[in-house]
Amino acid sequence: MIVTFCGHRDVTNEAEVKKQLVEIIKKLILRGAKEFYLGGYGHFDLLAAKAVKQLQKEYPQIQSILILPYLNQNYDTPMYDASIYPPIEATPKKYAILKRNAWMVDSADIIVAYVKYPFGGAAKTLEYAQRKRKEIIAL
Image (tube, rainbow, N blue to C red):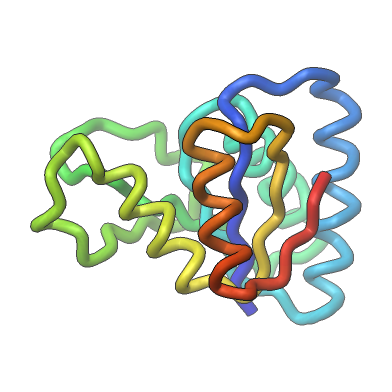
């Protein structure tokens, strides 16, 4: 089972959000989740990556995978076990993150969402996941 995340760049109440992420991810692992696709941008993505990394100590079978929107950038990869560049090379740079997010939703079984505002990339990704009838767990 593959899980991905979508959330705003800014997070209020960081400690509570991280606590919720750990609880949700743990439940998903117990349901069979093994791969966690992460975007690597913004505070919510960082909290999700930290939560997965923390749980790898208890569940070493899970993998944290960074999904890259661009090939020619440096990324902070020690937080992740692997990275994937989806088939979006023909996408103009301006739309690469949006296309990457859609690929993450299409590839995932479950989306964990921290979307508090009806605008921005996180809201668009959540709307896309809803249209695709994905299972969504909202924080």
